[in-house]
Image (cartoon, rainbow, N blue to C red; front, top):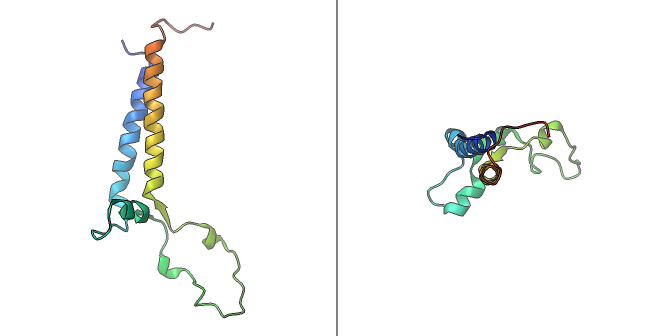
Length: 111
């Protein structure tokens, strides 16, 4: 019989596989000309439109840049961060399964 720690580990591994797969339809920035690493750095989920952002060319030479709420929000969530989260969850899931093998299968008590 599978104990609760092993079930938690299996759930974490399944979640770690599903998170990147579920984000794939929402990714933008892929290019055939770039290599694997180039695409890994440039691909992400677009949050806001880059065309609406003000650049330094839009401001005058003496106008100081004021920090606004729009400047704090990122333009996209990088896919590499999503993959890093998946790797961490996968690692934690494997550790949970290994810990469940070392514990004896006894009913949990309040001790």
